[in-house]
Length: 112
Length: 112
Image (cartoon, rainbow over all chains, first blue to last red; front, side):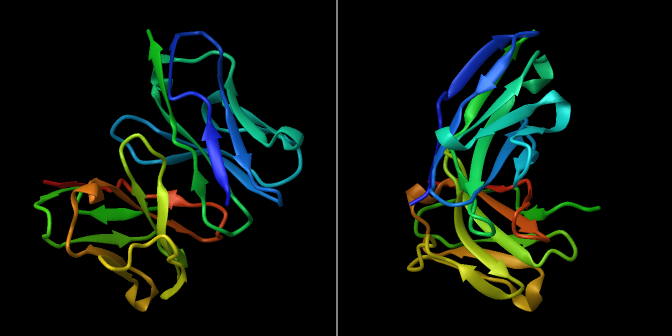
């Protein structure tokens, strides 16, 4: 069965620090990969997605993620976080039209 | 474009009572999903509709949960009778193509 693992449950950073959130998945076939973000009091929003092509994808608000097929990973990065990036981040995978499988989420707290 | 609408936003019931949630997807989105998100976990798919037909309900506890999507638009999810472990946020999502889902604000259910 497919599964998604996010390495950190809670990350605390100061503003301007760099961010990397880990995501690994288990599925042998072709996958689509997503990062969703949930800001406090708001609904889940798509941050970025990978379907095919360039493994380095850029999303909204300066976020990017790199798909490394050999490592079954799709880590999320941002060079310099802001207080407004405080949110919960979810990695998700589906096998092209199948159901989305979510990781357990990483809560990011950014100190001003 | 209007987003996915859900109601109610919050619901508190006692165990063994019944409850229903409503979802109105983005106009024109043929695919509709219901997810359950337990505190500290990522969303888990309960049921997926394509128009008004069920595509995947493998993780729906059918002895107590039911869902319908009449006329291929709005959908309702019902729990009868509720158990304490059903306390969660119930998310509705819709998509035009199955790879990109848009989420509603969710209904937070507390079962006491």
